[in-house]
Image (cartoon, rainbow, N blue to C red; front, side, top):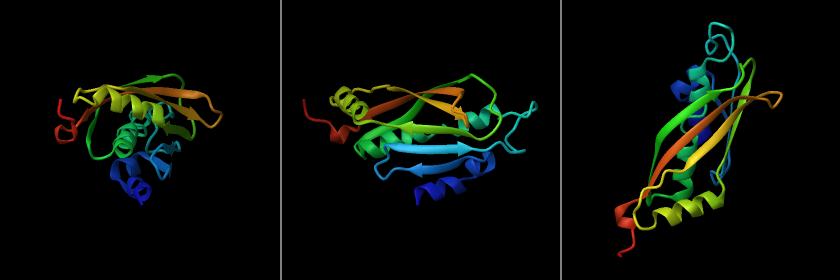
Length: 149
């Protein structure tokens, strides 16, 4: 259901972004974006803003869903490195493993904030890197969930 809602979300609909898969446990999300007249730039390649938009909320959403309601999770910072022109359909596969979640839980157990840094690559149909997106999240255990010290 969330996948369909995201596919109808106006910014994604307008950019041509398609969420193709969300695993039941939110450990993996697959997104793609075909090159269309409305998401290409002056030189007929993917508009950089569209490449970033296709990667924007997913790490935050995944970590939030995997950790549960006891945590505050926000996007803190992002950067994108454009490696090669995106000339056709591009893809991004997001994965969150249990080791990352364990690290976050450990670092935030006393109420400290933690700023994990994550990366996803945007690939073309041949598997070549079009862009690398670096995301920094802000994660903190909510006060009511902290252990008394």
